[in-house]
Image (cartoon, rainbow, N blue to C red):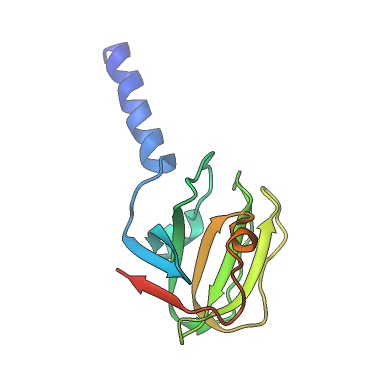
Length: 141
């Protein structure tokens, strides 16, 4: 195989695994702040999450959608960004906020709330925008 084509093929394969892609999209608003969100619904999408990303624009996020409300567990393995995790209840209200998760740690983040949604945004935005438990969330898929 031509060496240039090999490098191009390798780049495509790496990008398929690591590049930000819209796997599903939704507009998620908390109070009056909206985020264009990738939607992770499958186990594979949820396991990958925002791993290996070096940048997330302030108006972007990832929304995890689970089949039922339950106690969700997250970690920051291979996640290079500090993230705020908003745990969202079936009533579409913020049930818990984990502020500024430490990148690349294996500490489990699992509050004792039952939720079908989790929104990951850049670390610090929840405090900047004054998000709090009880805030209404709208999700437009």
